[in-house]
Length: 253
Ligand SMILES: C[S@@+](CC[C@H](N)C(=O)[O-])C[C@H]1O[C@@H](n2cnc3c(N)ncnc32)[C@H](O)[C@@H]1O
Image (cartoon, rainbow, N blue to C red):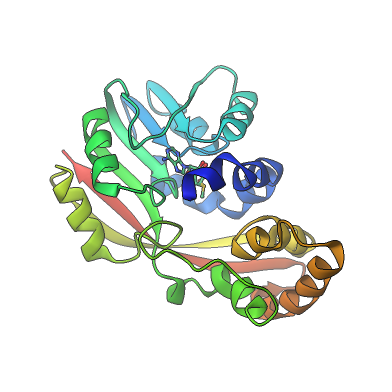
């Protein structure tokens, strides 16, 4: 279940690779926070990089996440901000002007219930979510390359990284949850990381990392040796480079 993953191994891996994900997704911070004012709730804030960015222009920014490890890392990143451990689907939040999220809202078991709860928590919504795996080949490279070597847990099309890929589905969820003014606009942002950290990235984050969690060292090595060459199309000298194909989702007035 998504919740257990984030509270467990995936949360710890994101904390460990905080510097890598900060750099990788730096280009996705400005479209999320530009022009924010008043009070902001950052949902699924992870280690808090977007909450800190939102606090630069907003009067108040609060980050919330289901993972204790992530929230602890966020508090260390900026002890002056408020960070709350909570399940955003059910937590009784106070009221904010804005609800924002970068990749933190695709994991709810009941998205209509979750966005109904978030509608109570804020007037305006701005979220960045992934478009589909076909438009984001970097994100599925490892699992495609490893498919014949290990059993990869299948992706749940309605909960997980690509759960908000279908704009019609997203619109329906938000409208059923009571959001008006729903709009989705495509957003493409270049992401980069040093080539030197690609192996760590693949072995710690994503479905292959989850599948290899309990494998012995020899199996991990064997799979990584097969998987890493598949990233060749994304290598540019010492840098890994790809375009993130996302939706920026807006709602509220
Ligand atoms: C892909 S990470 C994104 C983290 C951060 N927003 C960023 O961009 O670096 C997804 C985040 O959503 C959080 N999350 C998943 N389900 C959640 C839930 N039900 N309530 C709150 N946070 C949740 C995870 O713990 C994780 O930190």
